[in-house]
Each structure stands twice: as structure tokens, then as C-alpha cells.
Length: 108
Length: 108
DNA sequence: TATATTTGCAACCATTAAGTTGCATATTTC
DNA sequence: GAAATATGCAACTTAATGGTTGCAAATATA
Image 1: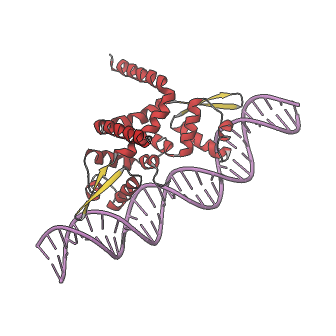
Image 2: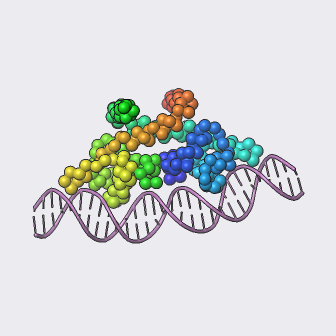
């Protein structure tokens, strides 16, 4: 399943990496400081993300800066959008329901 | 990672099951006919989806009808929406770019 | 030039996941 | 009541995953 974006996003550490890198590009070392695992473990996650082109890289001296690549995320978004088409009405009703439930729970 | 919706959606067979069931509720047997794997394998996928509440069930005699449950899909949608917030402008630009590329490629 | 830093790659290990087969249970049909 | 059908559960196998450690290559610094 190499290069599968759904697989890549399934891991919570990789989702956290995506969020961090989407905010600002980072090196593997800088990234690893945000996690409890080893640098190599983080590097493997980076490799998975890069393999499915969610990340792009730019080498600067001995450092490698990883950037978020939204193109592939679009593909992911696309699946959900297509899926939602069947469900648009119900999704919208659900939105409203959740909003109502929420405002109810905030009332005294 | 039991009950994790990202994990559940990561598997292509399970995504196919979701699409089928979103269109109409089905029994495990009916579902299994759509795939090359055994009924039990499909049942295990159903269990994963039910465990994270993407499916709900309704027993009718000896049959069990599985329904799509959009509530949890909403949670999934929510993550992507939050993620996109940082990227809204770039996502929109990207939309336009992809549309342009596509219409270009359709030209003679 | 010698040393430190940043990174990737390979080997290995433990756990999980997806598939199979076999079987037990509940329900319908004959 | 016996046979057929629909389903779930358990055991087992194999492949994939996430983690570790060790090491090599490239670059920066002393």
C-alpha cells in the first residue's frame, strides 16, 4: 500500500507532523524534538509522507527542509467530497443538529 | 488503535464498503458478493467499521442490516476542515490551477 | 585535517492487521 | 424436528507496520 495517502494519514504521529509542517517547513531534527520517539522513527514517518507526496523537500547545506504539499491533500479532500455528495442533505441536517445540541448544552 | 476512524478509512476495501452501504443498507452476505475475499474477511471489515461507529446495525430475523452512520464521518470531515483552515487560500488557488490544467488537457 | 552535526539507510524485533478455515448459534424453511 | 441459511467468534498464518540500534555519507566547524 506504499504511496497511499489514506494509509499515510492513518497514523496519528504522521497527522501531527503534517499539522506542524503545514504551519512551517521543518527539518527532521527539529520535528523529532516535538515527539517522544527517536529521530529515526520520525524520519521513517517523513519518508512515508514524502513517498505519497504529502511532503516535498529542499536541501540546504546538510539540512533538509520539508514542506507541506497540498496537491495530494486535495486528492484526499476529493474522496470525502465525492462521498459527501450522497449525503449532503443529511450532512447538513446533521450539522444543524450538532449545532442545536451544542447550544442546548450551553444553556442553563 | 481500535475505534480510530482514520485507521478504519485507511483500508481500500473498507472505503468501498462505506460507499456501498452509504448508497443502501446491506447485509454482510450481500456485501461479500461485491468482493473477491471471503465472507468472514468482509465481516471483519464490517466489525472495524462498526467499532468506530461508522456503521450501525439492525437485526431483522436472522439477517443483520448495516447502515451508514454519518455522525462519525463528520468527525473525520472536521479534521480535514480544521487542517484546511491554514491552507484555505492556497487550496482555493490550487482548485483553480487544477481546473485550468484539466481544461487545458481537454483542448486539442 | 580532525571533529561534530545532519541525515538516510539497513537490519532487526515486537505488535498489529488482513486473510484463511473451522465451528457454534440463531433463525427460517421443508 | 431436520436441513439450510445468515452470522459471529476463535485459532492460525502471513505480511505489514512502527519502533529500536548501528552505521555510512555529506556538510559544517574547530
